[in-house]
Image (cartoon, rainbow, N blue to C red; front, side):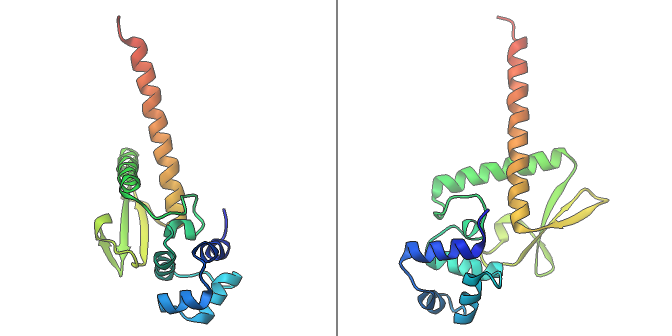
Length: 164
């Protein structure tokens, strides 16, 4: 997984933009941009979203996640929604649920704004723990892939029992 500073430099190069231009367009200080590029400091999520928007890249990609560099189109958004729905169903079937906390309040997925500082909590009623944004993304992918594989295996087994 590439670090934010590597991806940020690649996005700047791709956009043919200088760090000073990014600072002006995002309102983020020049020194902060410089620290992000040097890897000294990791940007807060709100600043990652601002930079991604100006650079026209996917903020998750900018953070180093294994997703496409481009921002989402409608088809990608639809696929993401379906994958999230499957993830939530798989989580629920295991007796867990996900809670998103913004400014100390629980919010639904659709209430989250692009620049919100979201804390994701997984809970099963007796045990709860917070997971980071990148860990949530990886966990969501892993659990969704696992659930899809289980469904596929069940369908194969079911097809063997069908009398022809």
